[in-house]
Image (cartoon, rainbow, N blue to C red; front, side, top):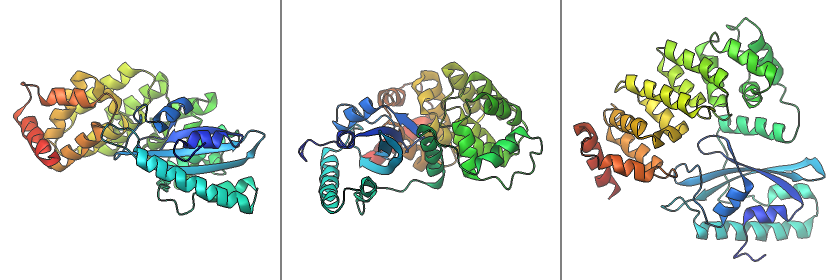
Length: 345
């Protein structure tokens, strides 16, 4: 394999490993190996671009011994179509292979692999919340026990003293979220979500957004959204519906939230754009979202920022541009669109 044609996934697979690949940009979402390889070869756009970058977490381990595992966090710049920048890919691989050869000449210890990315400019450190979720997912993939914080979290959810939550660790809550499809945990969450304090609800939702949820859990979250006047609770409830198994239930709920959004509630618009962007593929939802965004007190800066981000999402650019050209758009949206194109130019 030459430096010119090398891609990361093939390099790792040559070392007798298994790989799991996750996006860490928008949500902590699994990416199929075949899709990631096609992305590396610039055959397809990155499925979850964020800030014109692919934020990737790789977990890989020895096929014969899962204790021998490593984690890499790598960011790759994207071009204007969302594809990998070939010059950046090739530079990264050249640096990786050079360091790998130097390291292996000194030692054959498999654990030395964790050092081959030292000082590499394409490495990044995830935020604390993303790191917690990734850690919980990694333990599950490696078939290891959850962290020491899990016991306190499950005891809290299964109990009835919900006001005593200050001792909980965020890592324990993410462990719960990753295992929410297990029967006992699922039942406990459905029972507890309507009654736990807003603070715990918000943290749970930010963790649940990374996991597929069934209709029972979704309906529990939706009920809380409908009954709350707290915009943080509503925004985090929307986030938790990101991977709801019922597309219609998610779309209908977010449309209902959009209809009630006032100009000073930009936090909800940001939550929709960042976490549940798939609903914007629906013409009615997209139209409502753009109109609300154009009226936001956050001004044209937020409009421009979210549009530049959403236009990178696969399948959304043409739909957004079509709404920009809609002759029936409001005056507010027309002004926002005009300002957007002036800024882009």
